[in-house]
Image (tube, rainbow, N blue to C red; front, side, top):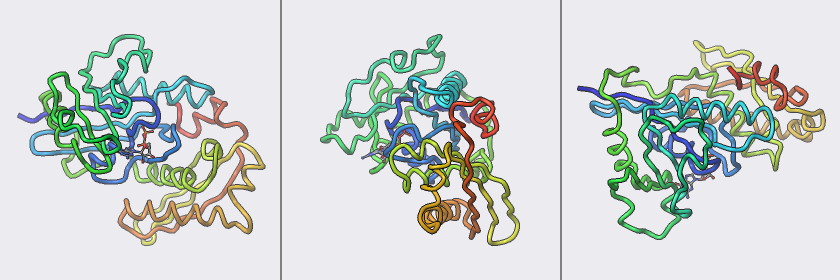
Length: 286
Ligand code: GDP
């Protein structure tokens, strides 16, 4: 009998949701940044091990919305939590104990799914062997950096998965199209190369994605909110956008396993984070 189900990785911004997803799948799918709130849309990663298929969802961090984009991110996170069969509630081990999920996410109803509390970034805390065993109260401690605790986490989650057939081909590790990841990796490069608040004003739209021949041709628009930001993203003599393109291209090539030609254009989409029509166009609201 096989088991299969959705496991949502939920928690406050910056607790390590994206890093854990990548560590579990063994591939860089979700964007990771020391800056909080880099995940805007849930990223799905698939892991099939023996008789169990895990459908992991890395959800946006649960936060108090400050503007329309946050409202959309929070709604996406809450939908992912409501739809999941198992909730992995992440909290840094250094801030033990975790407050109840209901306190972090004022959910309308208590979720029906089983909650597994996952203490993250265990490598930053002096070793305490007790915390590495799956505990009776569905609590595990993990490190996405060292891989400690990941097997224990998987065996705890496996026991919580419903019995049923696999939903996906066991060889698959993603459900979203490559153009989604291309846009995400351009955003990730923006988080790495642009300073302070600027990455939060960046959105990416893929205009063209031509596979079939090498190099794969991708043309994307990098949107910012104001004309002054456009100048910064382009940089002196186009230096910044060039570096951004190189960083993003390497990431897309790594996932695609093929050479990529990436063409970037920078445009202004005024105040897109606060406008429903822009958020819809960028795919942040359904
Ligand atoms: P998210 O916002 O919850 O998705 O968190 P991220 O996965 O983007 O991680 C936030 C920050 O914590 C990044 O700088 C990560 O490199 C760091 N981080 C995540 N997991 C670990 C871990 O297991 N150990 C350490 N030392 N740092 C981690």
